[in-house]
Length: 525
Image 1 (cartoon, rainbow, N blue to C red):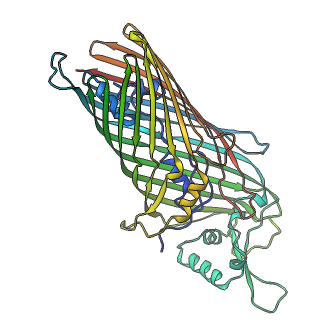
Image 2 (tube, rainbow, N blue to C red):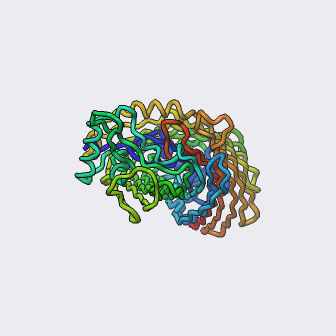
Image 3 (cartoon, rainbow, N blue to C red):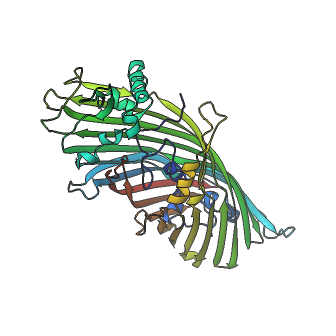
């Protein structure tokens, strides 16, 4: 059996999902649209540290900032995330449904080993530097959503099983459907529907030839539909890098990142009707997708002290080269009542659930995420604090899916159509980050804002921009420091739970908010 089967379910992308093969443009976006990470200090200023320096978050943004460390340090940053969503069928009168998803995480863990030549040692213009290694969480997939509402039966989930005209009256199709049921080994969407009695092969009436056709089970004119989607997981990065200090004026650095990703989506879609003229009661589609991956990237950067209180910074990061493996499972359950006037087979199971499923499927493939470039400026206000701002370019159109034919779970599929879809669906965009810190003796107060641009070419109103509002507090006492930060995120999503040949599939609008708080405790030495 070819490992790359067509799935019934759709991945809820960070922005939009649509019916596709198992791996599609939404996967490319999921692992390309990262967030700012690092300890609470970095998060409190909205991640705006490209020109700031002496911040552990520089390891993932601009490693040149490591050259500004005067002392070594170690820290750990645990945190929690509190998320909720309001979802509804777009254009439907049904009320929005609320859902929550909370999580615990480690935002950052790191060690910086700094060296500095004494001021009276003028034997070289290289004044020192710092080596750093650590862990940072760069994407948070934790979310949940649900909706409920009424649809016309020509918009129903069941209608997506409608076979093509040539397959509806093709003997090879009939034979294949019977084989899937007899072997209890399902390889197609229509096969699942047939095994669950949601589709049937019937003999043609009024003719002399033994013609047959595949028809779907009859539903009422209106169906009730609901869906719940739960996403969990993250993208994390293990980095090691070095930044050097040239005459306390120019700072250069580089870093290598080892990426680890995990993503799980559990989706349950239900559909029912109360029409006394139909035997159909309900169907339930349950799918689960688990994706694990590893990858690597590299970045270099520079910071120049233009004035004593003004710094300019820039960095570039290579694409991330990732190897991913999807594990997918899906089942379809139907239920029928004894009442109804529609034509049904004599063996229709009444009053009990019938469940059929695809075999669990593993598939290996690779992904190249976009190149990234950052620029920034930071203005220090003496001992009173600083203000800083960044701009980041991300070329989402550059992401590419590839096969992993050397893997036992891979094949030689070209991904040409999917990569063309990436180029058509997404655009290159700009992310903005701003932050400020005020210093009051041993205390610190921080504020930040970040705006991550909409990657979709179809959105003229920037509906899927991500906005991050941040705040933080800090304490510096001797060799000990303690920071706390809160990040409030707001983002809208649009997705279609499935697609239909008639183009009438429902569109689901999701309003997401998430509050993440992190606490960093560390020491300098």
